[in-house]
Image (cartoon, rainbow, N blue to C red; front, side):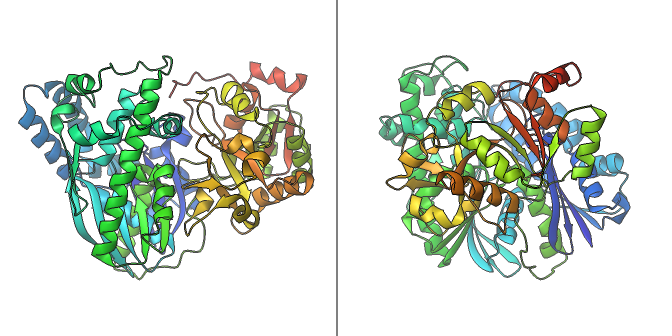
Length: 581
């Protein structure tokens, strides 16, 4: 039985296909459309899911959409009418989008897909929770969902046992920790819904000197974990900006202009809101423990992408075991919607998790890649010993584009669509930021680390460190061994790699370890600033040609080195001007 889950129209649209209770493929629309954070109807992703599974739309038994559009529309109308006339700009922008397609999801699905079967609607936070819990491998757990806003909910505490998820407590719009953090994202000159991770990366460089002012004026928290924002400082309920003049007057400086020089004031602002978020969420985690009395907890919603926050959670020891869903934003909700069709609507028993929730994208066989390279007359070499060769190249300071079989689902590149480099060289961080990623100099890089060696280098706790969802403190010696991946605060957003989860990635890091004594590589996403992670061989070739990547490797056996012959490809494969993000 096939169930299709769909997330669309807000940010990071996606599709996920479930077969007999197991997710077999999930893809974000941006990877195929090449529009970062694409929020359009995920038609390309749906068709690619069907193609990967070898089925047609006629084989789909049920489609589940990730939220309830009329609930969301009702909340937007309530908000707009309450703030009239100040909310008119928001009203005039939002209503045409709703009238055009967002209210008529069933009609859109039937028209675009030629689908004639049943369509169901989950709720936004139910979809988040289901994606996280059913992919966690846990049989019972507390669930904490934190994001900007769903239909009404912004924070949801739930409890799961077997195949059933029960909502225990909710916090509603406009009071939202996600929107609070986004307000500071905008204030510090970054883009809302995509720049929050920049704010997190900037925070360790500053001091939380504005922490008390945030508590005194912007937010009040209560003993049960709930909280209220002082809405007189925020504009998102009535206008098109997150903050207003009162917010700016409170802190005494205007919002930073994007791309302008980073004033220390905004660095301290990032540090301040980061520590406030950590303290408020830890309070929520304590309340969740008290409410559920569970030993296990699952985290999801966009706030769960804050890996510094996640480190504080695991170090607190409030719960015995933690699982951070690796695609906790709206894209991952397509997975949750499909699961809800199986467990919620059809009341099927919980199915065991048999594979990673990450390596579930589409793939390209070596035969297809070789055919494309031959058509383009691109010189390449094929070797069964590629990992040993590339390990030597990495040790010599070369930068590698690594394209390996099934694409990752979620915002992190975890060794299948990655750029790899030597973490022993301190200058490699600046080289990658300036010449490959084309991004801000303060942005850190993450290491992919052999699972067996990680405990000697990092302070680890019971959590899923295999998906770059949690930072870890570096132990003495780690900074000397791999300085390019240790952040300003002495932590790293690590990815543990094992032979079971990613055999080729493991082989490469193992070969590098045997050669150098360093059991890790720099692992960053295979893209440049403003571009989605590469999906196809052509995407990989384009990024390879127009950056300082030295070598491109397909499926751990096909290798291209940059030379005069590959430079000639620029007249065939043209660059794309992606908007800076």
